[in-house]
Every structure is written in structure tokens, then in C-alpha cells.
Amino acid sequence: MADTVHTPRVFSGIKPSGGLTLGNYLGAIKKFVATQGSMETIYCVVDLHAITVWQDPDDLRNATREVAAGYLASGLDPSQSILFNQSQVSAHAELGWIFNCVARVGWMNRMTQFKEKAGKNAEKQSLGLYAYPSLMAADILLYHATQVPVGEDQKQHVELTRDIAAKFNHDYKVDFFPQPDPVIDGPATRVMNLRDGTKKMSKSGQSDMERINMTDDADTIAKKFKKARTDPEPLPETYDGLAERPEARNLVDIYAALSDVTPAEVVTEYAGAGWGQFKPALADLAVSKLAPISEEMARMMDDPAEIDRVLAEGADRARAIADPILAKTYEIVGMVGR
Ligand code: ATP
Ligand code: MG
Image (cartoon, rainbow, N blue to C red; front, side, top):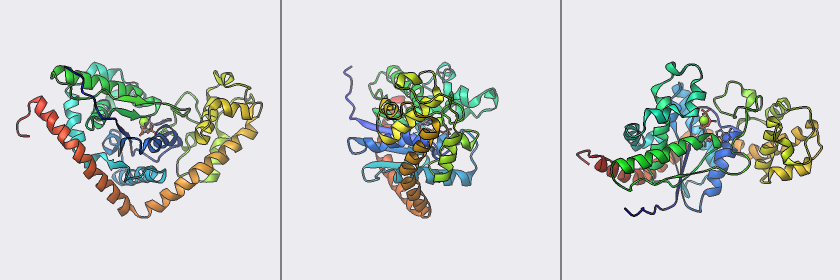
């Protein structure tokens, strides 16, 4: 069978499982905004994923609006991109179920995110947390998306999405779902925890000191970078000199991503500088980039009805693409009535 050529289309999402971090901004949102305009772009607040771990309902509502405000305040334009929250488009959950029946238990057992999030308590986790990757595959494939901009931590899930698409196409002898590519580039594909350079920065991490929140004020940002774990050495002459210094490299990578230069250029500029010089410069840079965004987010959060209106309008446009693809999927699978 000839391979269908799929129109380039971008899909990605962020969970409202807490407030946005600098990792979400540099690893995801900044890239979402940069892609906008060059092709069709669909961005989601994935609330169904958030409840794979307990969320207080009021906090979830607030976080959903805050993630949407974060997208918009960072430059996402709802006239150029589709922006909506996942639960308003029921086809996500429906295709997610079909993919639960395509994906194999052995595939899920290899997912490192589940192992990291479950820790020693796998038996006590929700079934949803375990099945999460097949819902994520549905999010992407429901739009026949071909590109998925994500941080490094989501690479394995996008690869699983490709496996699910291939198995569906093979089992039903169709060429229906595309093979989406993860898009993971730039210096900040894995922003690390400020207190432990072996762990990534996460919005659901234990301590507030380990992450920069998009809504942190200037003093808090300066304090967090000041207390960020480093080593006693000054910055090296070349970027290679950071190979065995994960915490130091993380701060250089953050600086590079925020200022849109390469990490090598940052090292050249600050060669030989101590942390007493570099950390305040990094804090000033972060404040100059984040303050306009957090101010706009605060302004938008004063008018939640307007955020809800944008999300509802985006959901209408998302449904217009998703519903025919779901209907065709049901037909392929052999469901009567569509
Ligand atoms: P949680 O702790 O609840 O999993 P999270 O901070 O990991 O939250 P997600 O909603 O899981 O955020 O991920 C949203 C997007 O942000 C994904 O594309 C993910 O790869 C990216 N991302 C998350 N953390 C980082 C990070 N530290 N560096 C770069 N990208 C990141
Ligand atoms: Mg995550």
C-alpha cells in the first residue's frame, strides 16, 4: 500500500498538575510559540492527564486556567494556533480507550516516566498513570499530527506513539495514522532541578526551591538561583569543561536558552567567572524574560471568563478536526452506528 502523505501538523500539551516552571517554558512553550505561523499548530492543556495523580478540583480548575494564561502570555495567538483543554474534546478519551486495546502491557512496563513517578509504590498508583502513554498517543494521533515539540523526558512517549500507530495500521491493514516525530532541540531540552542536577525540574517536584515558577517574583528568582547547587570551580574556558559538572552545565544551558545564544557562547563570555558573578547575571536575565510574562498571566487570571471563552472556542475548532478522525477510526475497528 502506498504511504499516505500527511499534511505537516503540530500537536503538544502541558498538564495542569501545578504552576508552570522555567522547564516548561524553555522546553515546551517557547518552542510552541516559535513554530506558530509556519504550519498548523494545536496546543492543549491536558487536564485528563493531570488527574492521573490526585488533584483538588478547585486547584485543577485554577491550574488549567493558569497554564492557558501561560501559553497566551508567552505569545501563543489563538487566531494562529488552536488552544483548548483536553476534556472538552471527548474524542481524546475515546481514542485513548481504543489505543489501550492496541498497546501491549510489556510496552507500558518499559516507560521510565511511570517508574520515576511511581517510585517504590507502583501498586498504589492509579491505573490511569500506568496507561497515560496511550492517552498521549491518542492526543497526538487524533489530529494526525506529524510533529510533537517536547522536552527530552517525553521522547519515549512519542516513540511509543509511533509504535501504537504502526501496530494499529498493521492490525487493521490500513495506512491511517502517521508516524509523528518528536521535535527536541536547543540548549534546554532537559532543564534540571536546581537542588539536584541528576533530576529534571518538574512542576510537581517536592520542594519549591528546586524550580523557578513562571509566577515567581524577582526576589524569589534571585534567591533560588543564589541557593542553586553548584560546585566550587569557576566557569571553564570551553563548554566541554562542563561535561562532568551537571549543575554548572544546567545553569549555563538555562542562560543560553533564555538569551537565545549557544551554551558555548555563554562559556566564552563568562570564562573564569565565579558563581558570585554568574548567578546574579542569570537571575537578572531570567527576571527580564519572565517578568513581562508573569505580569500578563496575572492580568489574565483576573478575568477567568475570558480564558474559558478562548478554550471553548479552541475546543470547537479541535473537535472539527478530531471528530471525523475518530469516526473513521471506529469504522476501521468495526463499530456499528457511526
Ligand atoms: P509533572 O511534574 O506534573 O509531570 P512537568 O513539569 O514534567 O510536570 P508536563 O506537563 O509533564 O510538565 O510536561 C509539559 C511539557 O514540558 C513537556 O513537553 C515536557 O517535556 C516539558 N518539560 C517538562 N519539564 C521539563 C524540563 N525540566 N526541561 C525541559 N522540558 C520540560
Ligand atoms: Mg512531566
